[in-house]
Length: 409
Image (cartoon, one colour):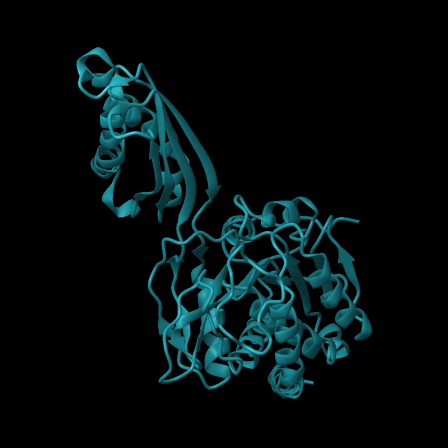
């Protein structure tokens, strides 16, 4: 079987499996599980793969990895899906809406899992052809993408990238119509850290601020001036954004409190800037509060680096999209964080954005309880991932500058 014949055969298998992918996605959607708790989801995926004769290995707690094709290939491609849901209440009113109050698949990971299972089962139907051509594909079902710094690090520690040469993933995009695939070379998502600044000082009566360390005023300065100062101390091409989501200080209108805090996220598109921003953030916070004699404690928790798509990875996804009759579109950068970054940092690869908006329908947003995914996108996503995997395996060479990793015994 030629490479072209294999791609056509896999595509036909995905068409056959598409109704089952929809059924799987609805089952997962109705039974969402939070980060590190995806035991049912893992079990459902494992059963489907095992019934198809796909060798698999369970990860600690939740998640699994499965291998298809040649056992000792010259080139191995990984495909990744994330398993977890969010602590968000669903308000879609769908027949298969979440049955767990306060938890739902508001980021579309149920679709990611169904897409990868569909692609994996289609490739498994042609496993002999994969082996005959020396092709190998690894399926990675990863827990806890929503929990920084992400379940990807645990999966990597357990060897999911051993012997892998490149990796692909996709993310649903409810701002793109079904049939559209968004691609971008370089950073496609941002580094995302959490930041909390806690101030403490001598409080007192608001009529006598000169006898206190006016913590509320100092906190207001932190909220407004720290982001401003960072924007002038960092290269603007880093795409830095420090945004506060919570501010707390005091309980009474006429009392200057003795403690208060603000918390938010620090995001940027440049990986080098992300590596070095910590000391500068500390310096800026200390300089802003210095005139007010309060004590500042900075808690800066590094999250994930940017997802930096390789040119080779994007080219393969573009070729896969064209191969199924889609014209890829250039997608915008996002300041959202994604732990897929840990994989591409090590072996290179790319993430695509998969349109899931019904043409002419409403535009939804991720991490919202009303998210609705047009399920006709599932087969498209499966063909995109499977096509990229076969094409990448065919390439048989690693992107420049990425070292080979041994396959664990």
